[in-house]
Length: 231
Ligand SMILES: [Zn+2]
Image (cartoon, rainbow, N blue to C red; front, top):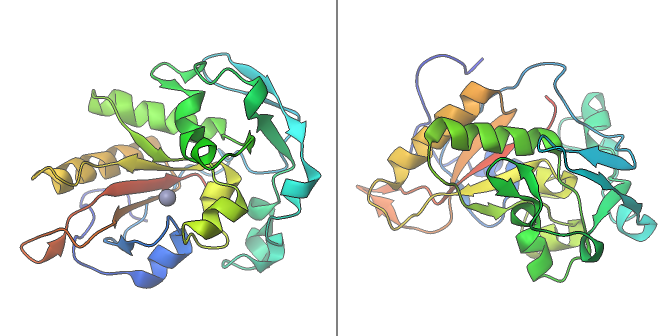
């Protein structure tokens, strides 16, 4: 529905959407989203193994205690029709036993997707191969390196940073791509990321502003949240 020309509109403060996305305590600066290709989802149920574009295969582990911290699938904000997209994550990457320098795609290591979780002492994570593919495609399209601010968060971690209960970060298919807010062209760069994300078929794209830094009264984007929620 949002394909075609046009981009995000800086200045529209979609607080409700921001809460639905749930990166944290930030302000949404767009009401436009990108919708992905139908059938290309990598929703739960997750299995005991995950395979990335690089060929990296990881055997996952159960952590029933962690799984139990996930919110009930049928309570998601989009209703029972979407509950299969919100199944609790049942298998996780065992971080202490995983070399985090391994590539998941050509330019990204698995450690980049779990860095914020590890900073909080996490030993479990999940990284969705589809979002990893999309991040790589965005990077390749832009032709410049990207910094990933936040990937996987446990429900507890997500709560601690003010994320929405059903944030896609807890399902491992959301990534916040950093936009250097100090740059005068931050919004131009955010727009480029937005456009690439939309072009490669990311399910949901939303530029967000972490602080009150603004340009001519409009918020300056600090990161672009992308996720493959499956719809
Ligand atoms: Zn986010």
